[in-house]
Length: 311
Image (cartoon, rainbow, N blue to C red; front, side):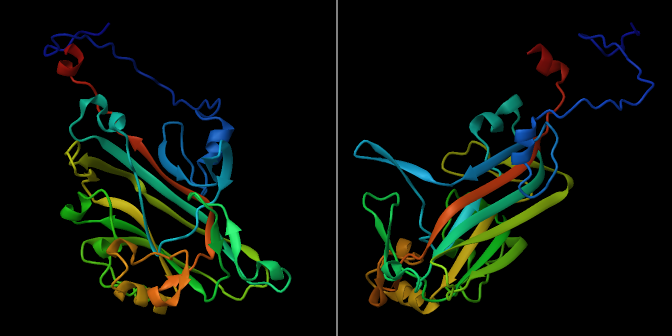
């Protein structure tokens, strides 16, 4: 036992000197199945990595006592997906006023299925009945123009905006021009990708995969601010991260819908189920087959002080 430091009133620490580097490796802290799920973008993580993830694959609803599977239609032109969402237990762990985390990487992956007119399946050329989350089946119609997707990894660097819990297109974008997208001041674009679904495909159904992978610089340490404020959201000291997906499809119909007096503001950017030119309704032609969003991080565990230990 080494001599106790003079300023150590409660604990005496035993000093252990290790002369050799530890090179033994008997395995990973996660089993192979867990590691495989953590490598959607090929990133490597150790056993002390956590993740927040969403997965909106096939869902189920109960109808007349029967459990029925269904897929969600792509029904919005503007979609926002938050990143690094923590539950109350994580935010309040270790009684830290400003919990700290190390951000590692982000994996976004979505598979869409488009419906096209096909001479091979004449009975499907006009409409297709698909089960959705609503009480009744919904009509899908073949695509009529190319559909364009703009996906952005953004950082909200505006304190007033970062406090919001929900967002609309108007919060991020200047104007309603989804063909020439402009973000407002205070929105930083970290990464962006563009994809499109061509209209004239021969097959009746076609899968389309869109993915975005982003890795933060090593050991990007952040702290959580605005924690536990009623009616407001928390954010990091360096901003608030999210994924924005903007769908540009039959823009002339979109402009009709935006300016129509009978369409409520909350429905202006919908891809309405019913094809109706007078109100800018395009009908549904694409549904979501798989959706995967995961953000990896490590909590920073601060060492206990003497006062923490004795309390």
